[in-house]
Image (cartoon, rainbow, N blue to C red; front, side, top):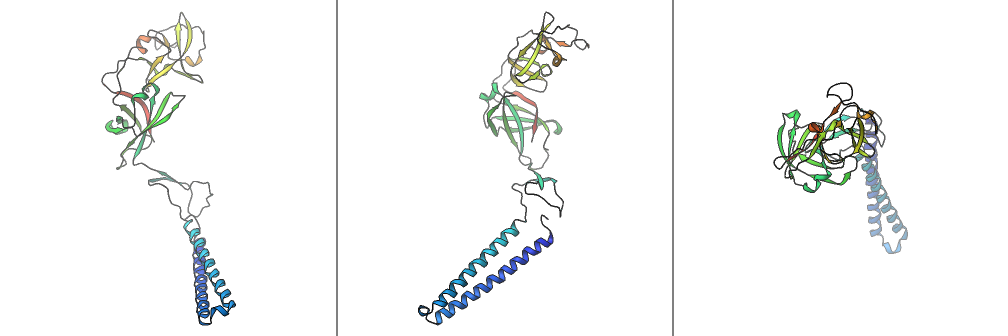
Length: 296
């Protein structure tokens, strides 16, 4: 459907005509050879020239056939991968430019789970590390898998390394875009200072939080470890017992005056480190990574 039926018919006619010319050239060549052999070739230069011309005609005709067949093959659009057509971007009979998408193909088997591994844990994770995948849309059914690939380049904004996990999806149950929970096995448990993810303020310099001391707001640049959708591990930049601002911190600046109120009131919503900065001992040998990773 990439070309009109008339264009396809014209191409086929061109092949037929080229083939006829080729056959005629071959017959002329064979006739010239027969005449040449029958009339003492050493004394007849004209026949030698006739044979050479006929041979050139054969070569030219064959080249024309090859070119036309190539052009016909180029009217077929073949996908470079197997998969499912997710969208058709042109209609039959329409015009498509050289850089225009004709169709979008989704390869769903195997399907890839994209995760981010914090910088602090990357030394403990390698290709082949065991992972348990839970997919909320599929009743959190546990799927055993392994780390398939790890990017060698650190994401400077997230301070983490991208990794991929290949999952068998023969029956097509897992759909692209589903949210998963990935639990990487074999990690060493450790105590950590955790704060609510809502307390973070993203800046060009990195993640920051505001603490309150003697009614004054102070900002702190943090070094983060494990990140989930609700909690963030703080490697450095805070200490246990610091009082965090967890609402409205985007409106604060260094040295701003803050009135501490009970959590939930509308005037100055802070959160004590007794709640958000408790030590979080990781039991067992697994640590949960990236509650909001997405398959792609």
